[in-house]
Amino acid sequence: MNLRRRLGTLDVALVTIGGIIGSGIFRTPSVVARDLGSPVAILGAWILGGGISLLGALVLGELAARRPLDGGLYAYLRDAFHPALAFVFGWMLLFIAMSGGAASAAIAFAGYAAPVFGIASTPAVLGVFAIAAVLLFTAINALGVRAGANAQNGFMFAKILAFAFFIVIALVAPHAPAAALAAAPQPSLGLLGVAMLPVLFSYLGWGPGTYVSAEIRDPVRSLPRGLALGVLGVTAIYVAINAVLIHALGIAGLAATTTPIADVARVAFGPVAQRIVGAVVALSLLGFVSNQLLTAPRVYYQMGVDGLFFRAFAKLDPRTGAPIVAILVQAVIVVALTLSRSYDQLLNYITSADFLFLMLAGIALFIIRARDEKSGAPEPRMRVPLHPYSTALFTAIAFSIVAGALYKAPTDTLIGWGIIATGLPVYAIFAARKRASERGIG
Image (cartoon, rainbow, N blue to C red; front, side):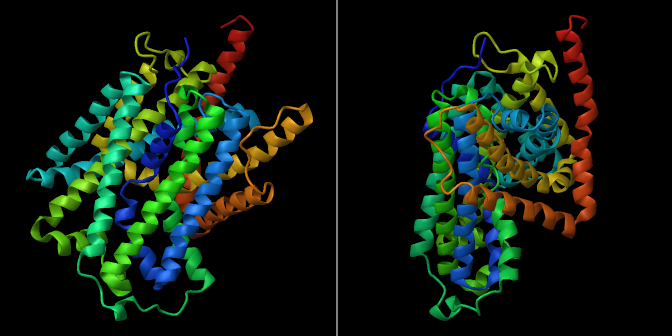
């Protein structure tokens, strides 16, 4: 029994948007404004971040077109390099990145949602809200990929409409005087580089669209298009939000606040602004929880199919076609992380690892292209424009971020890599068991 192909281009685009937009856009604009101090530079940084992310999405898109394989990036790393590298990628997703991200978003959702309903934000209340969100989306995703995608799509449409409403309101609300919009001297390249880090982290999350490749009706066509459309959609939203924040608050006002969207809403809506913004942020975070619980179990499923993880992970529900064991195990880990509140430090440790694996994806495209040329495999319709230069540029940017993290926070970065490397002995155990089974002794 195989995963059922139920998804199209629009689903992939919305999964991509859902994987990117969490809570970062509610904080990062102020950080970037403080670093750059110029409207042109600020908007340019967000456009550049979108361009870099689009380039990365195109790299994954060509990999998907050349290797429309279950598990997406996991499979590309497995085929280009070695199953051990793919395994530690999946290991990182299960125990830190996706599970920790879902736990962090669930707790943050609870923190915003409780005041919206007029409930005191005690630790017990936050825990109940967070775990309820995790269990709700676990149940929905257990009903199959179409049910999970429908829930994800509904939240994404609501999120997009909420942002569009905010943009319109910000344009008609009282705005900063012209003097407040005056640009500071153009920032140096060094400052632009510093500002690009939070921008690029705000764009992270366009990879999970590849995890559901086995459930896309025409992955060779729909996956690259969906990834590109999703990144372009997020870029449009991010640039528009930053433009209206500059319009409404001015450069100094935007740089001085830590809650820019709430500040604009307060001017537009008055006392009810806090609840309105809280509801929008809660909606955004809930959509992010949905995204993590929908996409990541497909990677663990493929690890089980490959014989590199527990066989139970490869089992599909006969009625819904969902990888039910993978979904339930991830839910248990997310709930455990939510209760322990240990996810934030873990996520800090492995943040640079996201770019490490994206850098490896860029290298993987060079390897897989060379193999296809040598074997005479037909060229896919979707190819990265200006390859090899564009692919090399993306790979170099990802490398610079990893190197920058190692330079700026060597201890945390090395701890993160050490945590990820704990998957290697586990891989060795499963690989040995697989070899024994293939020889007929296991």
